[in-house]
Image 1 (cartoon, rainbow over the protein chains, first blue to last red):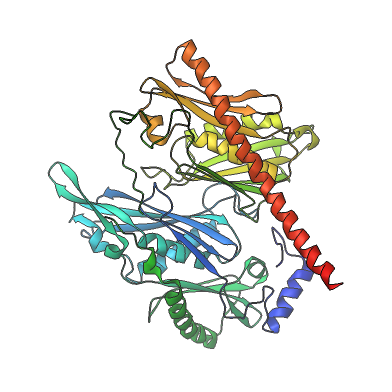
Image 2: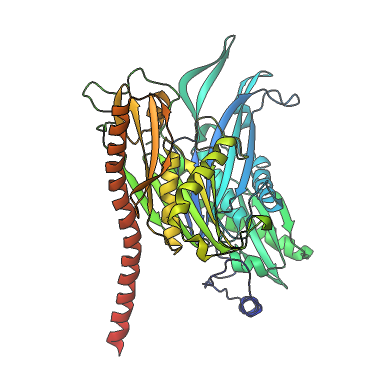
Length: 275
Length: 259
């Protein structure tokens, strides 16, 4: 495995591209193969749900916090779920300190859209009283090590976090919110399990789950979010173009690979049990 | 098992049997776990679990200074950035760095700088990034420990490691290593750090009230506790090199067999 920290030399770039043309990858994977996912959940005691997800060398730790606030006027009976991402300067020399840059906003937005349009979070269940009080969920992703393909790792991490949720249940009274002592868990609030799959493209070769060196040399990427049988959001990024046939093929492929991955990761094992 | 931290302060911080709420004796530390080299991209890194505290640190450097005007022509600079994750505390923390985080960053930087040979690296910077993933009292001490481990892991020349621990007063009794609840509900909190090359104190803050005798006890107990932690720090660093040594000797053994 190449030890890439900041820049890729021309010789490394050629090596990666020539291998891809032979349908081989520098870490020995096939074109449609993921690196290994390692997931640990609910390990942050201060958070109302959390997940530590590693995809190869990429590592993202996500936590869930909640607040009670007023709903949006056009959705008086729906709670809110917001997703934020931070590319910590600790994770890579490529990341700098300061306010969120394009890359971290794209990560948060793509993961957010995948979840939002998939009917994943049951926002109606996050309503305490119509027009008055709803839960606002904050799903915050922190990148701990950047080894490429932050989006797919973030998607799994956000989903595992929501499934591990345990939010105190409140009821609305005249004197404010009263806590019942029960908890809303991932089982109550999560319905569909959306996954986002990212492909890199170099010349006319497309491959799944670009690692960092591959990401640094590729012309562009496309991220497709899918539920069990539907495509829910797409993001094309980078200065490249995709043909109509390629997009059709990727749509099909994403649903197939998504199904396999969803079975393999078995997300419901991360739900919490509260006695 | 689900861990749920409640935002309630108990009336008493000692149990009937004289132990503290989490079952510890007065001079007992919470369980500590350390690891180095956890972040592959960094020049050096470390991870620390201390009770419910979970903290990562990564070191980059020596590298170019940004912004450039901070660079010093005759020596390197050390910059420490202590940050907390939004979900690491009971009420969600705002994502932007606050006053508290900036102050603690400065305190830790001042605490560690005496052990470095910065005059060997003119015009460059060492940057230490500390991320608190889960917080439960004593994060500035824990961050100091993990930052000094990460610097050692990065191979930065150091006079010695730095160890920090908090001593405090709860319900009138002096105890070491305050937990989150003890910190908030206790009477006094005294974080201190020791640089081992000269056995002196390089971080010291104090909030609360104490008489001279109690203060004296604090310093003694603090040093005793720091010595225990220092041993774990050294073992953590050693175990990394022992494991490298073992894997190398395994390889040389197998290749030797083939010849």
